[in-house]
Image 1 (cartoon, rainbow, N blue to C red):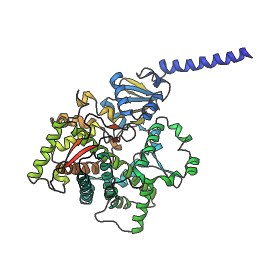
Image 2: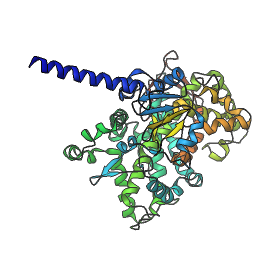
Image 3: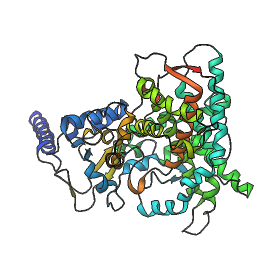
Image 4: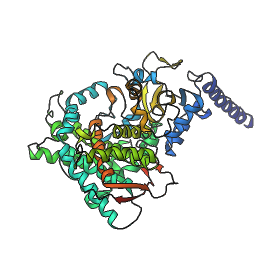
Length: 498
C-alpha cells in the first residue's frame, strides 16, 4: 500500500514538473519574455489587478523586457506602435476576448451588451449604425447650451467652499459630481442633482466602485466569473439586476421618455437614439437603448472626471505649465475672445489649452487594463514572435502613451509643449495616442468628453487658483477598469472674476 502511494505521489510530481517545464521552455509562447509566473497561469495578471496597480506594473514589464511581454500563460502585452493597426485597425480580424463580456449588465434575466462589451462585429456595426448620429460633434455642439448650467453650478459650489475659509477641498469628488450632472443634461436634459446636493446620490458612485474592482480582477481569468456573479442562479438569488443603481436609472429614464412620447428641444442623446428604435432587426431594441444609456452613465462621467482631475493635478505639480495656460486663458478673456459661459468654438482654438488636455489624456488614460483581442485562426506574427490562434493579445493605453520612441525620453513627465511641435511630429504622436481607444472601437462619446473639458478648464482657471494641499504627497490611483484618483485635496481661492 505504501509503495502504491509513493508511486502515485511520484507520478503526480513528475506530471506537475513536466507541465511547468513545458510551459516555461517548450510552449508556443515560451520564447516571449516575462516574469516566471506568467508561464503557468494568470497569477501575474490577477495580482496586478487585485493590487490596483496594473498600469504601472504593465509599464514596468515593458521597460524591463521590451516591446512584447508575456503576462499570462496565453496572454501577451505589446508596446510596439506598429501593432496598433494590426490589432485594433478598421480592417483587423482580431476579435474582442471574453474579458469584455463580464462587464455586461443583466436585463430581464439576459445579458445586456453595448458598444464596449459586445464581441460581435456584426452587433457592434448594428449599434454604431443606429446610434452614432447621437455622438457626433454636431450633436455635441447642439447641446452645448444644455451643459452650461452644470458648469455654472460647479463654479457656485466651489465658490461656496471657498467662502468657508481656507480648507482642503476634495476636488476629485466635486469633479465627479459635475461629470454626472453633465451626462444627465446631455443624455436626458435633466439635472441629476449631484452638484446641488454636494453628495453621491443613492450611492451610485461609491456603489459602482466594488463592481468595477470585481470585474477588473475576475476579467483576468474570465472562467472564474461563471462560478461567481456570472452565475444566473446567483444573479436571481441575490437579485443583482435590481441592485444595479446605474442601470436602473437608465431604465427609468428610457421608460419615462417613451411615456412622454415627444422629444426634447434640442434633442438630447436619448431622443436621438429613440429615433431609430423599432421592432425591425435593423432598428434599435429597447434593451439595446438601455444598454447604450447605461454605458453613457458609467463611461462618460468616469472619462471626464478622471481627465479633469489629471489636468488640475499635473498643472499644480508643474508651475511653468500652469502659468502658460493661465496666461493664455486670461488673455483670451481680456481680449474678448472668451466670455462666460465659455463657448467651445472659441475655447477649442486655444493651443495651450488643447495641448494641456491632450497631455493629461496621455499621462493618465481612463482605462488601466489591457485592451484584449484574440489572435485569429491560423495565428499571427507580431514583434517577431509567432502567436498561435486563440492567444490573447493587447495593448495597455498606459504603456503605449508612455512609449519613449513615440513621445520622447521624458514620456513620464507632464509637458504640454510636446503637442506644440511641428505638425508631422504631432500627427505621429496622435496616431499612437490610445486614450480613447483605436479603430472602429474608438470611444463613442469622445466628442462630448472633449467639449466638456474644453469648456470647463478655462472656466475653472479663470475663476479660481488651485494648489495641492500637500504638494509633497502623490495622489492615489486605482489602476482598474477606470483609473480613478483620490487623495488630491486642494486649496482653492477665488480670483473674483465673476
